[in-house]
Image 1: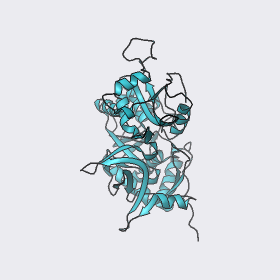
Image 2: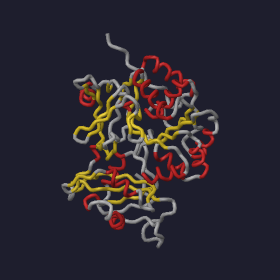
Image 3: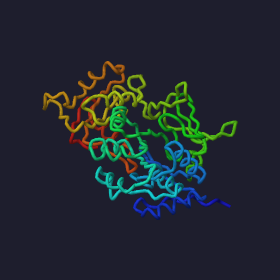
Image 4: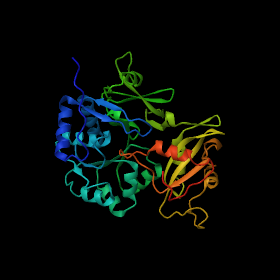
Length: 379
């Protein structure tokens, strides 16, 4: 007899009572089916057991100082938002919700409804950045006992600004297949194991999902069990482990750029770019190139006070490709310097809050290798 499939969560438009009832049923034994973000390709349906949901929520509570009161800012049909509801159900609390889409004003208003602690919220980097740019947003975020930030790389400059504002940030790493974030500030949650296979990050422990629904071949490819009985999930990410077992991510394996025979990890290039005073956000991609195989492309969002090149003598003017390369020469090897710079008003985002890499790669491939696009362009 075939076991019933775990249900999908209610629509993100469902009221909070429906969401909590669904989470309670999931924790009671039905589990849940969630769809991956599709940030790099076709979304996949992932079955997550009740035990995995419980393990993830319990370990998170231990790391953040106990079960608490959450503010829901992310869609619940993806794992980060859904886990806020699960954690609330396990804690016996009701999450606060935004009145409409995410804005600084909506965040501040919703935050005021949480009167008991611990006060907790999960954000993506773009949301944190928006809060930091407004005094009321900074103050509201600083009142939370923990602000979890995941879904994409958090630039060191943004983290520094948050810490200076008194915001307690925990950088989270994980995915739907691990029931959400399972490594916080480079350290695994209780019960989670991290290993490397030729640089590829492997994650193990009780938080692992059961399978990809309807795709046994992919399940067998990505999930495995070793001789000790430990289950592992093979991620798409490349990383390093230091002597204390702390994980440093270098980017996705399929995002490593092969340019002129050299391999370039995007993450260090993005970190260097966000140190530039003109750059608010940065995303680095490998784009097909007739000469180099792939060219290193930097998609940048300017700080609000930056201007387009050659229109101002201000040192905050957005630099063109040649200028960006010159600014980074002391920090990066020559083969890692961007050969294409594209300035956008904002990075296109998926519903999960992650940057839409597929759309950006397609857009950048339509541009010449040395052509600069400026604020006002849209992917």
